[in-house]
Image 1 (cartoon, rainbow, N blue to C red):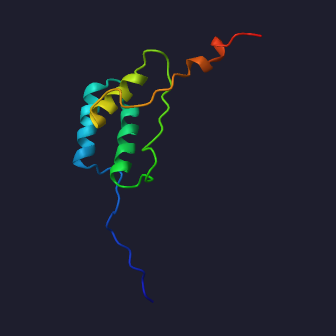
Image 2: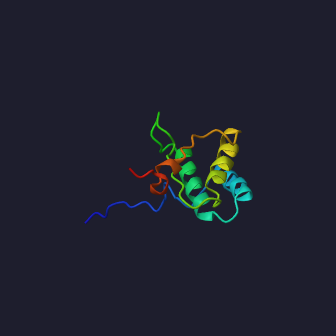
Image 3: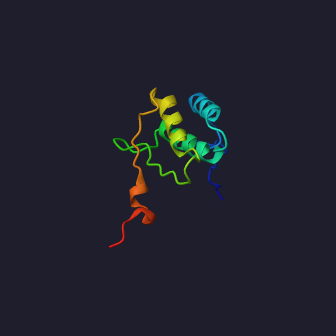
Length: 107
């Protein structure tokens, strides 16, 4: 009986990060305090992009940050844009306050 060959080599380990991803994570954590989960998610998405697993001619990602005023939603995006693109304004922001049920006028 012939046993199938099973390689012990790991081809893509999500725990292994390139120097570029580690630098991005370090710089982002240096700018953002108390949002470790959000930073981790952004770093993971960046790692997927660098690994070439993102769809060509498509955005790297669409992010939706939810939370109360002052929780750091805009700041984390500005910090990411500044690190990656050199400008804290290199992103598109859609302010959805106008869609809130509390601000709708009653007919």
